[in-house]
Length: 388
Figure 1: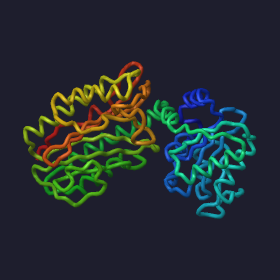
Figure 2: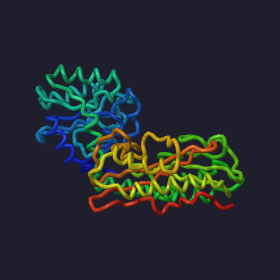
Figure 3: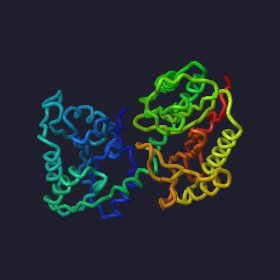
Figure 4: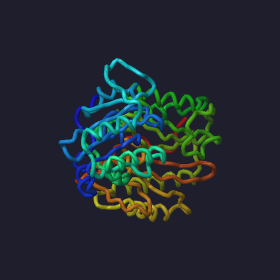
């Protein structure tokens, strides 16, 4: 997909820059560089290979992007930014006949010098950056007469409120994942393995049009029933009475789904059924209560107070989170978070509880609007016992 117009929340970015008196931002974090450029690269997690977007408050200063040479042509095709430059990395030349800077800093210096940035205040991701890159970038900015300031937390709040394009991608990812849950649940049968479950869910995601698989974390049987994030199938053969849980999400243009269901094969104790009933009751009530103007801390306190009526020693440090380019974004629904929820925020509300070697976990996705809440994952079955 080509994003030739800005996908990010430009009004919120401009408002933040005005409030903080920021003249430009330079972002290289994986999520931020994708979000602010619209180029959904997959190489920015390599520390030595920065993908960096430079956005200026003054429209007379053109925005720019700097990428490794090996990704230049793709970046030019995918980003809305017109000035895309490359530094030597992986390849010395490509099919694009242009100058490649010897390293990232040389390219950044050239871009900044052309825009006569001396005296500007420039926001960076500050302490979120690796120490080496931060020192180099801030040193470059200071040598050119600029003042770097840390706006990492401000950028998270910019990203919190989603644009129409982002909401569409997130909703499509959730819809595909609901269908993948269908196939996953249908494969829960004695004799099948957790690898069979993984294949059923993954194939359904791709067959339904997902652009990738963000997560399929499966707990299956005593070997993993306690786990939150078991990445790989173990080969466990399903038996009657086994606990099975899946935390999964499809990707649509870099935007993931993220929600969880838990099951027992054929039978479950009355206490397990009571735990599951209460977790879901509290989670759903809390999700439908969400509205603009409340804080993440207020959400936590309401959820914690409610669940504590039924379950002792509730273990969670948070009961939900925002979702966007990153699976966990603001607003984090933890006790101390004072972030105020705003319209067009997409959140996941989740509750979990440990009992008898299992980790019950339920998670659902909601869009918070000015007019109310859309419960995106309402149609995903949540019956605890799978008949066999």
